[in-house]
Image (cartoon, rainbow, N blue to C red):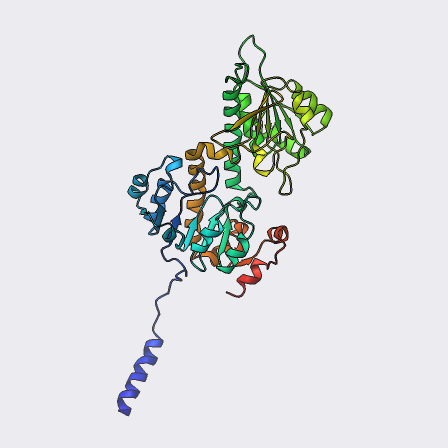
Length: 405
């Protein structure tokens, strides 16, 4: 026996001295995901988190995608479209929410959080102003890791999904304004201009993404555009982005009032620093506008920037006040839900694949700023100071939490 043991030890020692194969590092967490896409139930929401083409991309990478029946119906995608893309159509809503990764457009309701698995990951919009009051506490109880797609910031410091929705909202606002100007409630006016006829005047409040693309659309039709913003650097930027000289001004009540008196269309595209958009157009200013003029208040989801604005719906989108047509539908991008859903998918699907290729959520957070920028809750703990202070809750730094893993 002793002789045998000595021989084995000698062979082991000899083998240890031989050249060894290099072991390639295998990233942890690269297992296949189960992704749930529920049907949106929030008021006015017609979008879906992923379109069939994006589902096919994820399935091709080995992930299972569960789509609730009729989740894409309002975006004009059928269950057959998703099934042919490799998704599994699910009729039990609870099963979709029990997936390890849940993708939504709007924030979940308390009832939807109750259906989620403990420790799951949620990707949705944050929208503190419209989400349930106790949502953050309920997410915390389930130890959810939550990522806000409207907080995702790329390496250039831009918010790609917010910008995409802003581009849509800007373009759609002008299309809607044109339809209302030529409708029965207005004076049969063509938005834009033709030879020998005075062009329409469009006043845009806000020089952000929505304002920029509203200006592009209006100028493309031949309208005369005036842009107001309370930040000078934004006015400079929009001049450069448009590539042409356009009438701009800081927000001065007397100047704004004069511009609105001759305006055919006024677009509200302001975003305040807080949860409420500042009201900069008084009822007196609105009453001085032309009969049949159109107001499109894109800011209505945060209260609106016109004193006369009140929230309307896709079913009953307009009302007339002081002989001025008001369109105050929140989530204006949802009115073109097919395009908006495709824009969401174009960013969310590669984002998910990037997280997986990095080896999972924790390695991805450490190596990718875009992932880190979107996280506001990690394993049930709020990690975003601003959100915690808004709701009067405690928070912890994400880096400190990650150090424990």
